[in-house]
Image 1 (cartoon, rainbow, N blue to C red):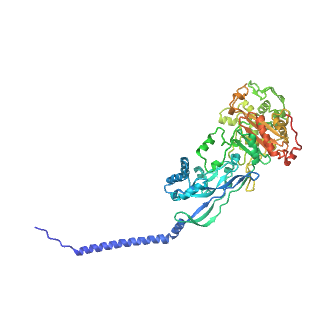
Image 2 (image 1 turned 120 degrees about the vertical axis):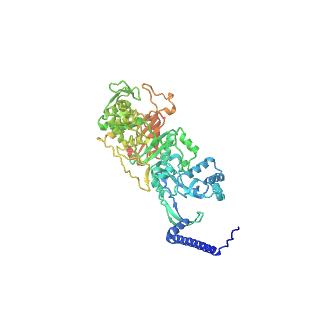
Image 3 (image 1 turned 90 degrees about the horizontal axis):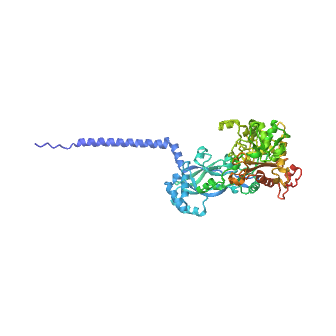
Length: 631
């Protein structure tokens, strides 16, 4: 039997449709209400926030890097300036696939793969967002034109004009003025991000680093309106940067050149300074290098050549070179003996050519194997008699010797504004016990009396010790900056002067140093022949390799770089010192024969006029012109 056919319920279908329409309309109404509420929230409640955000989309604050301060020598000659240069910078956030853009740059400018690696390394360094990163410096006109033609292929890349550090004197002041270089990631973490915004270089060595806060200046800002592509349409507000302070150095370019010429291309170090003020007049470390190579980034091979050179041109011998002072320390040891009462000017020692400690067989040799007979203080300094100073050191003892040498700056940093300086080493009982876990032996005290053994000093420290003798104990710390924006630097931690119980002891030691140059048996009398002024000096020899007991030094059996270093210190005019000179010639062997003539040339360059006569400002210091000395 078939089922009945059900008829369609139109009323029920109509109710269903109406209910669905109502639900849909309600949902739409709710959504409209939510939209209106959201619009109200965004446009009314958060009006100020979004208006500011919108404004920032077209108004940007850009840093204006300050102009770095200039550096001059004492006569106004520029030794560090800023010259205009075009660089290629890249903003990674605007470049899309920035590695592909780097490939395009290398292709357009026909650069090497080494350059490509350098660019990528610079792009990966730490930086602030949307900060342009300079990747190529000193663009020429052809490179600028190529970039302009291919600009559509180089998003986020632009040519920027900027000032770049330049050292017109080249290698002359590389070790004193130093150089600037790109800020690395380690430095970026310690620098004030606001103060260094827009700045890509910082002082790395020398004066450039020590006086970085003064040379850098203060950053400026400008508010600019940009379009959607970031191009500047107009400047709305500008705050000018404050340029860095100019620094005038105490160095003299003419004396610097004269010192380099006197050194004659040999490896070594020279310091010339004014003992009255501590101003360094010349500072030479040879061989040197061109600091301009480091400003915009030195190539791998060029740096490897400098770093791996056997002559170590990057090594600052004046501040970092540690050498046994040899006999140049004897004037300071003599002062220690006189002031402590261990000796007087008339104290004599018999020199048979060696010295022996009581109850010991070991012989400590004098450089003159035949001996000088009875020797007093004058003769001991004039002849550089080792036996006399062995005996003096033994009488002083290590504790007194350590105390007095410390007053002369041995074993400590002496400069005011040379951060690279090494403190050197003045050994003591405590030092040996701590570092060697051994007791101090009497023989070690003896060899310290002639500047050998563990004692190490820099050429700058030897110059300062000599300046203290010339200045009768008055401490003026060596400095390179003469004025900073017209004002002299202030020594916030002055060193106490050396005050002797009998101030006339200074003159006794100075007289012995004069006899080194002017005495008939002086070790450096040849270097003083024809001088127009009196010189006080002291030669020294620093051993590089030890010589066995009883053996003689034979230069023919020693490699050139194992031969003794030649040292000499001196000041002039002797009765009113205006210049102190310290010279170290690596492997020069003879202090009196090699280093002393260098000192004489430098003194002549400073004290004599173009006519070869003593300058008028120094004439009163000598009382009378000195005639040529017989050889």
